[in-house]
Amino acid sequence: MIKKKYVNLFIFLFLIFSIVFPLTKMLMQVKWDGFLALISSITFKTALINSLSITIISTILSLLIACFLAYTINKTNIKHKAVLKMLITIPMLIPSVSHGLGLINLFGANGIISKQFGFDIIGFSGIVIGSIMYSFPIAFLIIDDGFKYIDNNLYDSAKVLGLNKYQIFKKVTYPYIKKPIFSSMFAVFSMIFTDYGVPLAVGGKFTTLPVFLYKEVIGLLDYSTGTMIGIFLLLPAIISFLFDTISKDYTISNIENSNNEVSNSRVINIILKIFTYMIITFILVVILSFVYYAFIDNIVINPHLSLKHIQYTLDYGITKFIFNSLLISIGVAILGTIISYSAAYLTARNKGKIYNLIHILILLSLTIPGIVLGLSYTISYNGSIIYNTFIILILVNVIHFIASPYLMAYNAMKKINPNYEIIAKTCNINIFNLIKDVIIPCTKSTIREMFVYFFVNSMITISAIVFLFNANTMSLSLLINNFEGNMMFGEAAIISLIILFFNILLKIIIYLINRKEERKKTL
Image (cartoon, rainbow, N blue to C red; front, side, top):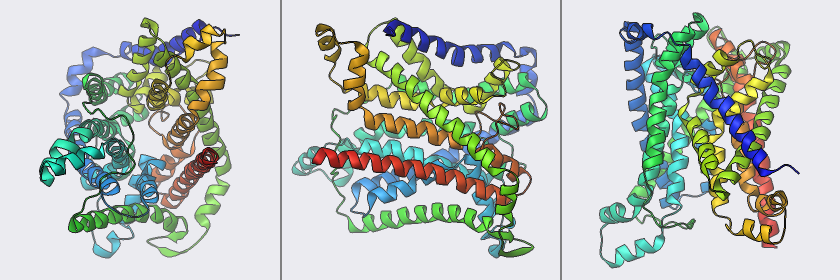
C-alpha cells in the first residue's frame, strides 16, 4: 500500500516542477538590460494604455451586468431560473476568440447586422463588447453564489424594525455579497487584462499587451521581451490573489438558502426581467451567427445556403483535431481531478508546513495568466522529451486550471466530520480505505464538478497551449485561430459549434447523473 508521505512528496515535487521551475527559468532568461528600452517604447506604452482602458471599462460593465442578473435570478419571481442560469453561462463554453468571431459575424465590416446599418465595431468597441461577453458569466456565478447564503430571517427582522429598502440592502444584502463582488471584480479584471483571444479576433490595429506578447514570441521569437511583458500581465492576478488571501468574509451564515426573499416591487421586477432576457437574447444571437456562417457560401459574394464549409473542414481532417481535443481534455480532467482532489484532502484534513506549502503553491497558480504559463513551459521544456507531445499540453492545462477545482474539493473536505481519521486510526482502518469508502462517497458531486471544470476549460483554452503545439497535437480551439486568421469565418464557426456541442453534452451527462442520484436519495 502506498504511504501517505509518498503521496505528499509526489504532489509537492509535481508542483515544484510544474509551477516553480518553469517560472524561475523563464525569469532567468530575461535580458534585463532591455527592460528600460521596452517600457519606454511607444508600442509598449500604447499597448499598456489600451489594455488598461479596455480592462477598466469592460470590468465595470461586466460587473454591473453580472450584479443585475444575479439579483434578478435570486430576488425576483422570474420563471425557469435553472434554464436561465444555464443560458447565461453559455459564453463560458466556447473560447474567447470565438466571442470575437461572433461579433465579427454580426457587427464586422460585412456582418449580418452591421451591413444593414453601415457600422463596424472592429477595434476598441469590439474588444470591450467581446471582453464583457467573455467575462460576465464568471462574475455572475461568483455573485450568484453569494446570494445563496443570505439569511432570510434577517429580512424579516429588518422589516419589523421599520427599515426602508435602501437600509435593508445596505444592512442585510450588501454584507453578504460584498466579498463576492470584489472577488469577481479582481477575477474579471485579470481575465480581461490577460486575454488575447478577443483582441486578436476583433481588435484590428488596436493592440493590447497580450497581443503584443503573442506577436513578440510567435512572430519574432523574442522570449526575453515576451517574458518582460508577461511580468506586467502577472500584476493584476497577484493583487487579486493577495486580496482574496488577506480579506475576510464577515457573514455568519453557512447554510445555503435556496428560498431568497423576493422583491415586491413590480416595476423593478419587470425591468430586471426585460434586461435578463435581452442579455440572453444577445448571447443566443451570437451563437446562432455561427450556425448562419457555417451554412452560408459567402456572406458578401454569395449569401446562399451551402455545405462547402462543412466539406472543407471534413477534408481538412477535422476528426483528427476532435480526437486531439478530447484526448487533451479527458487527460487533463482525469489527471487534474486526481491531483487536485488528493492535494485538497491532504491540506484540508492535515496540519503541517508541507501541507501549507502545497496549499500556497496551488493558489499561486491563480496568479499566472495562461499565456505567461505557456511561455514559461516553452522556455523551460524546449528540447525535452515531453516537448511537442500531448503530455506537455495536458500538464500545462492541469496547472493552468488546478486552483478552482482544488478549492472546490478543499471546501468540501472542510465540511466533512474532522474526526473520521481519528476513528479510522482507532479501528485500525487504512487511510486509503477511509478515503475510498467514506470521503469519496461524501464528495461525489464535487468530484464531478471538478471533472467538468477541467474538461470544459481544456476544450476552450488557447492561451496556455498556443506556444506548445505542433501539427500533430493541434486542438480544435487553436484551429479557430488558424481559420480566423485566414478569414475563413465559416470554418471557424463550425469549430466553435463543435466545441460548444461537446461541452454542453458533458454538462447534460453530469446533470442527468446528479439528478439520478438525487432521486435515489429521496426514495
